[in-house]
Image (cartoon, rainbow, N blue to C red; front, side, top):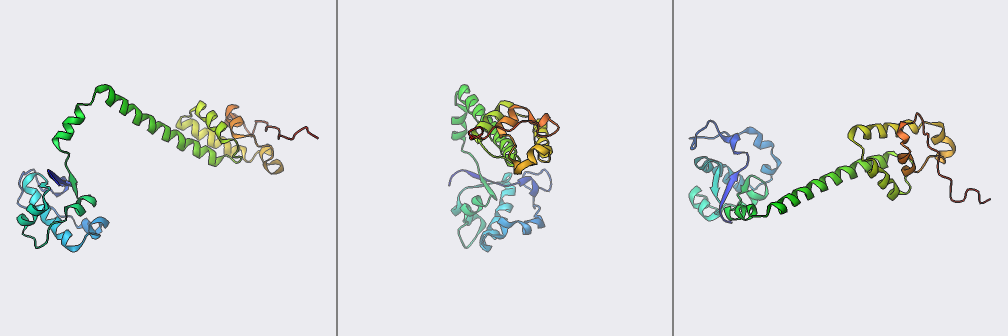
Length: 213
């Protein structure tokens, strides 16, 4: 390791705004922290010593286990890897990496931001469609249903209306007749704005064999 490590939630340890306080706050709630309880006993003791040492440097300690062991006079080498993995210590980003990232072209940074925003939007849309798909009693032609749903791109308020419309239609005479034989396909219902009808309201598609006899 290299550089410095920062104590997680360091402000919680501060008693007052002193850069080098003579003592720190140790909350009893640490006993309820699963990550803390899972640490070996020696590592727990090392962590508490690190908290004390960090108080003299604004919550930071060198990322050097050998140096820390000497400074804290421990009989065992401090296991910094375990403390970083458990989240009690946070590795600071080297200045060179931060500078390198800041040199990215503005267009590239903007493109990455838009890409992340697009992924978040797609994830939200997929979650909304999954909610519709699970609520709809006839799950056929999912691809067509996804296209119809994407075309509507419902807001949260409209999504509530769609789900309410499905629940209302489930009790209609059309949807309950002949074990749901006349429930329209999802895409048909969406394209016809079936949620605006008082009942099922949209005629079901004829079965492929209809009229063949």
